[in-house]
Image 1 (cartoon, rainbow, N blue to C red):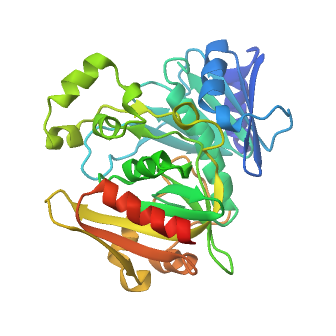
Image 2 (spheres, rainbow, N blue to C red):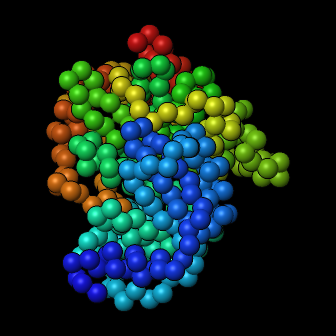
Length: 356
């Protein structure tokens, strides 16, 4: 194998002789995708999941192949990705080779190969469609970051041409707040990641085509979401204390189009507001205050996001807190502090969105 084409050689080796008759075409803003697979079941699941973004055209800016099958020993030496702070389980390993990167998921055995236009997912895709979904979305994130965007750890919603991002340190409930707002009629933009493009007036935010994965407490306290949980699980969860519900690791997919109807999930909007959740479950009054983000880099850290393994920069990518603060020029920033009250927070956010 020519070392200059090591990744391409691996992709061709793994896909040689495997027919991929099933295709799913997607449109995410100005980026078109074609996903090819040998699994009809996977194609069906991707069609269901990406329903708001299906595209009947066959032309694509990014092509991805997802193969259902065993992964042979690739003869690579993988490096371990250390767990995030507060976590102990090792989930991913990676190897950089000429032409790109190979990532192996420890728990599922799925392999992902990408670089120089090659994009391949291989393994038990049918048992792990969520990992294929993430791979597709990570190709979109990489495209936007290489176009000059910054990656943010935030949810997003919009009313007409007014967008709002919501961020907070882990467990603050940005996805829960976003879904409270969608229940009040706003449009969903993103669950956990936003790409921010600075402009001369206000930044533009680009969402990720990933539906929220919510915990039982979020579903139980939002009438629009209660149907996600089975009656048996509902009875069990209702017997738990608020603290026990808050800490549960169990997650459910909340498909926006199925829960709230069509045209309620978009991926691009001018970003007029950023709301930073900095509250606590202590029963104190909730406070909603506008702040100068240039003086509050302690909160800005909740908005900044590391790219992770599924991104390889074309021209370097190492933004600083100052870069994020500059990107927010023209965007009003608010801090919600005090005690946790999603209804009060949603009402405050809605007032801002409706008066813009």
